[in-house]
Length: 244
Image 1: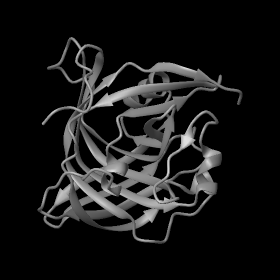
Image 2 (image 1 turned 30 degrees about the vertical axis):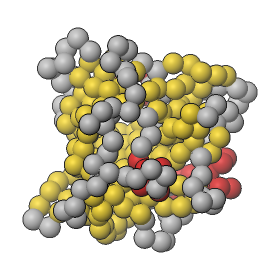
Image 3 (image 1 turned 90 degrees about the vertical axis):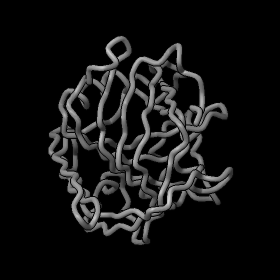
Image 4 (image 1 turned 60 degrees about the vertical axis):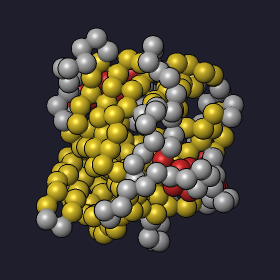
């Protein structure tokens, strides 16, 4: 199965993502728009913006030139994101990312201008499925957000159909970020299409969106699971500037 775009000549980093839970909720546009930098247009599906919380395990980060030596130890990560586009190019905008590995979140904050926080995250599998428990411990965070629960996946694997909500939520091949000077950045990402499975989850605690001024949705999220993909990252580049 082919990659979405050709980054074979200009990728700088590879990552292996494993055992991902995608949990998504529709959110009124007026709640999300103030959180998005001015140059980015909020992407919507059936008139709603969407908040995604993604729990997964990073099985390896490799730099170009040393592909057999992982840069960091393996670790779990949780991110909160929504969907945007800029000049017609759709992508992901991260509201927060939580990880336990100090080197990863320190470098990612400076290199990709991403809002990483240090968190204590447990992510494990047992006879009933996958379990996760996260407590943010970063002193730079105004709120000690947390996320815990468990999930299990169905056995049937499928690929998202063209124009479906499954495709719209998961098949995103760039990230956007900003810095304090009002510079807008874009980083291209590539991987094969997501092999997806439906999932069921019990989420006992979710305060990851509380710092953004609204309560977690009470409705059951739209859930997907994926055993994972290997991805490649291009270097981040500045694509615009705006007045904060």
